[in-house]
Length: 301
Ligand SMILES: [Zn+2]
Image (cartoon, rainbow, N blue to C red; front, side, top):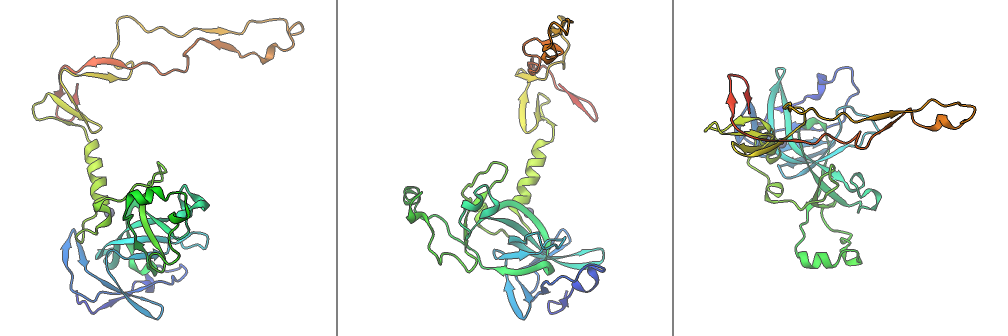
């Protein structure tokens, strides 16, 4: 593709929808590589209003959501790679991005520093025309951990007014499902070669790990990411194997019938008294893994 050609996708891509105020996109260098029908670039020029701005992976963007509505906040993100791909015979200008969270959207809520951003472990492909603004965010790592730990809760812990870029700074990741703020590792901080995303790789690996496979020797099996070997004892859910001695059925004691005139409060009693452990989970069965049997489509242990 001629790098000088400007592509405007806004013209009739969203017919019938409200015209989006977004960026126009211009690729001003030769592609770096092509893989999986995606052509990757080192940089892109985005025209936002009157301004032309060069953008490279590692920079931060503010993206308008697909369903543009005033109440939906715009998404801040970090660019991991820039590329074009053909979708329904149209060339789309895209970026693979990692999202950020505002402090107020974390568990910290309004107690957070409004200038601090947190990197999320989520990535997505976004259309570059949806970019609203280029954010000026800086990564400010903790330099001296001992000093940083000591200053917690004091005035010294508060970042300087002018710290970071115009849109301030980030230093921690945020994991919403655990409410944790881990320190980023090298994979997170560095921007990979175009087309590679450590978050996508991680996701694919997790999926692969979950697949059940039988070991080459036929004596081991991987279930939910853990390996089990012949001779090992396993805990499996009750009722998998029937025992000769049947399990006891918990007893229940129905409410006695009484004269309601004599005992007017009797209706308060439950209809039946259950014995202990009626809601308790059944204990696991403990079995020894004897053999892994494999057929064409399934395998048994
Ligand atoms: Zn990714």
